[in-house]
Every structure is written in C-alpha cells, then in structure tokens.
Amino acid sequence: MLYTTGEWKVDPNKDITFPLVRWLFKLFPILDGSEIEINQVDLGDEFAFGFCQQDDEEFLIHVHNRMDLTEYVKTLIHEITHVRQTLDGITDSNAREDEAYHLEETLSKAFWDRYKSGTPNVES
Image 1 (cartoon, rainbow, N blue to C red):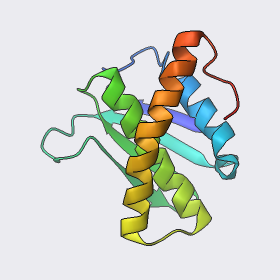
Image 2 (image 1 turned 180 degrees about the horizontal axis):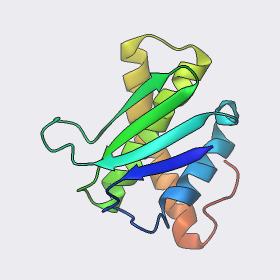
Image 3 (image 1 turned 90 degrees about the vertical axis):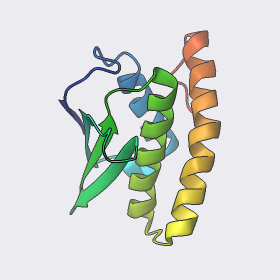
C-alpha cells in the first residue's frame, strides 16, 4: 500500500512516482503487503535528498521536494531499496548503502529506458 503526503512540488501529479513504485514492487516482491508513505518535504537543511523511517511494518520515506526528476527517481529507488533491505533483514550499514547507491544508478537507468519506451511497468 502506498500513501503520499506533503508538499508535492516534484512530480505533483505523480506521473513518475506511481509507475516507478509499481515497478519496484514487481522487482522486490517482498515489498508486497508493506505500507509505505512517501512524504515530499523541504529537506534543504537536512543535507540529504531523502531518508527512511520505520514504525513496525510501516515505512515513512521523506523526499526533498526541490530536486529534478532524475535525482527524485534515484532517491526513491535508494530509499525503497532500504525498505526492501529492512524486510530482508539486512542490517550492515555499509552493505545497505553500497547496494542502495548501486541500485539507484542501475535501476534509474532501467526505469527511464522503460518509461521513454512507454513500458514502465514491465517486469525486471
């Protein structure tokens, strides 16, 4: 289940957000049944484009609301990767960040390739 809150200045109609999240749920089946809230907020003073918090089985992803779409997609992929890692029981901080940075690059390229071809919802 996906919820959205905050001041949506990046992708205000969620034309990128919803296809991206659906695609990530297909790539990471363990996410199925999770409650994820994406909150767009000004993180200008936080020195981060995004971060993820967990409360039991619910996850809250805060994303900076003043970035371009390319960085926004990378940030969402990065933070949803952390959700998947938590559900998989991966706790090593270095391993989590290494994987999240790697996937934000590779999956954002794959997503944009699919999006531009008109097939953002295809499996892997």
